[in-house]
Image (cartoon, rainbow, N blue to C red; front, side, top):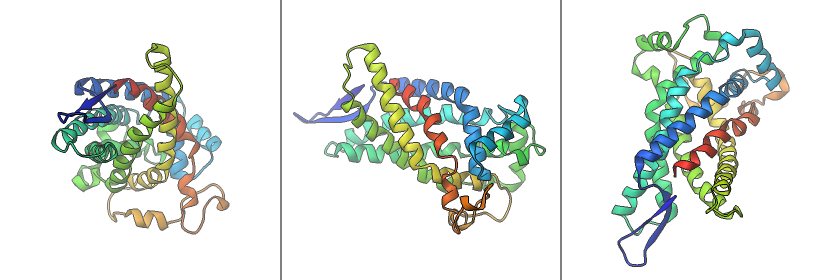
Length: 289
């Protein structure tokens, strides 16, 4: 990890970034690849809980009944999307931080992280079509409509470019703030971990702890937005449902008591999974900064 020293005498920005943006891109890509391959089944369980409002055991039963051949169905879009998006997150956060510090040297550490996080998260949103296709492929109701990623992309083409970016609003609301929170809280947690950073295994353990804690916290905080995004993205064609409409609509649930009149309770269905699935990505990505 490095901090950028400013040209002003005695000025020093304590913003965690890297002098080699390419290193940040590569490490982010590698961490995301390992994360997706290892945790895709867990993410699929979480997806089913979001969409159908069922408990974990019911979601597991759904996957078991569909068989192993469908277990990694829909894996390609998140594999491409996550490897690129996490690479973009780390690489562009590094670049944006350096740009802000260079052109606005009097900007506070927190402001730099806030602006760089928002810009990096918004840059990630260009990959929305891949999240969109992932949602369609993971929904069992669409198994008969298309067999793979290429067919799903072709299926949406008659609806125009807007259809590929369905769910963009919740993605923007999630990406920017969550990127800012991740880098800010991660630095704070790492400072408080009582380990000797000069020793490799203690540095690695510190990275893992800070990534696991912050990743679980941030993922849980933004889980309701992911639920809304998922509900929007499994649909296609008009009418185009807004976030506000989805929030007001009661969500499907296996038991009536699991939802309230506004559907807000159901937006937390499956909330125990994101913390688990986010740990490998966030902790392994630490090595890139």
